[in-house]
Image (tube, rainbow over all chains, first blue to last red; front, side):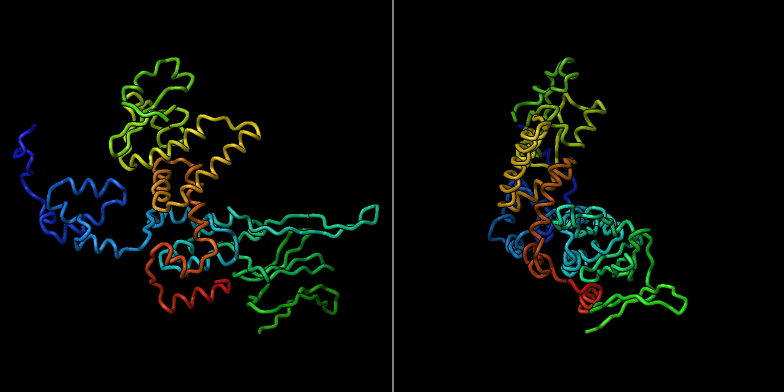
Amino acid sequence: MMNRRRQRPTSPAPPLDNDDLLSEILLRLPPQPSSLPRASLVCKRWRRLENPNSAMMNRRRQRPTSPAPPLDNDDLLSEILLRLPPQPSSLPRASLVCKRWRRLVSDHGFLRRFRARHHFSLDLWKNKTNCDDATGWVLERTIQLDKLLSVEPGPRITSPCLDFVEEHNMLFVSTRIGAFLVHLESMQFKKLPQTIGMGYYYPFCSFDTKGNFFPCVFTLYI
Amino acid sequence: MATGSGAAAAAADAEEKESGSRMITLTSNEGKAFVVTEASARQSATIRSMVDDGGCVDKGFPLPNVDSKTLARVIQYCDEHGNKEAHTVDERAALAKFDKDFIAELDADKAFLYDVTMAANYLHIQGLFALTTQCIADTIKGKTPEEIRTAFGIEYDLTAQDEEEIKEEDTHA
């Protein structure tokens, strides 16, 4: 055995001499199963502080019921939130949890990755009649809306605001950054001058005296 | 998975090096040694890069951030994905079944799930990381903000104005 006296540090660290401070430091040990047993093995005083009846342990009990280390790290939390389903309510709900979550899900980089993961896409189905006069829905085309409307920070398609102007083969899409008309033949899109608020809307077409086509949207607020 | 001393890894000979069937020793923060195949260890990008850099294969790899219980579970995943083939439909289905059972077991013990998530992140084991973070995301899914705060012990620090802003931004909140 080595001489214990020789192992004694020459300058004891002052915060470790104060029970309260030491408790605070031990509280911050990682939540690994080995942390507390190891701390108790240091000396009698440390062991006493780790005792279940000590003030420190009482404080530890007051901590959140399920401390989740992966959620304490911004990078890891972002990775987890990226994996939420692409439902319109996922991100708004996450931003209502606390300031930190709100900051993470509002980050442009995060939103770009979230969209890239979930590909906000639109499937266009067409009711077709085949040679036997049987009709059925056929997937005509899938439109990657997020790629088409490549505007940062990324339009969030709000689900009820979609409509199809069939006679002109145009699609009306309302997003949080504005409303767009997409021409399905050319795949060109045009941003409508006015932002469409949430409410009921009805797209229709209008022609001027020279016969030029005007896409119009009639919005009914409730 | 096999446990033993660091000396076992030193037994790897040149032929094994070429075939990739060398044994590698991983040591937990409690000093427990786990001997795994190189294929298993290579599931971890962290260890893979250390092996490829010609690092301390013979001495083994100490993992100061991972305890024995967590490391044993992580190795269970790596063994399955590193040592088994995934070429046929049946083989892939067997791996998918393994993943499903593996994560279901972890999901029942949240503290352990978090430990494994942290280890998967530290060791850069992509498949395991995706599996565990998806599992945590599934816990968040469908919960109200209030339920999320309760489930994860998060302190509510939004002001009334913050809430108003968020709700104005999106009617789905």
